[in-house]
Length: 245
Image (cartoon, rainbow, N blue to C red):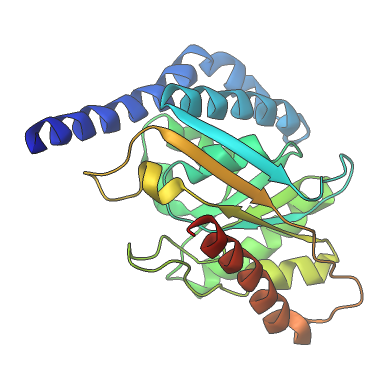
């Protein structure tokens, strides 16, 4: 019985990468055109959302999104969520309809096909370089001025399996305060069970998402960064604990 489970997990992981690559190969010319100009990014984003839905449905993930508040189409936001799975990127794309840019680790740019578009559409950061982290702010400011939003997983990486929610880095909150844009806390309830970074684990099933009430940054200064950080983390942590009851 255990052998059958291991065989399933091996093929399930391979199937995931097939689903990731197949639409990119088929749509490669269209995707390439959509990233030629920064002003065309919303078109790339729409295609990315279709790609994400294709993967989630193909993996047997049934997502359920509860939006307490819905983002306004013409506004910019800072979207933040807990990070536990390779499927977090896809679920975020499905959850949020407003065009946004990911701030993510540069290592993902090495993934064949996916990495080609990832490094050309996302803001990459080397978490071991203070210079790279500073450059993120400059690139994020530039993208915000074009009217798109930003998405950051504020844990700064994927925590160990036994950690329910790691501490949050301040970067997302400083950036949101600097630009006076709302923080949108989002909780992913089941991604660790569905498709964690542990190879022999996961499987089809539900993916619950809660988009919480937005946190305003109007009137806040950099001195309020820690408070905003802790408030956001507590909202997500409480929801995770509620999901797990």
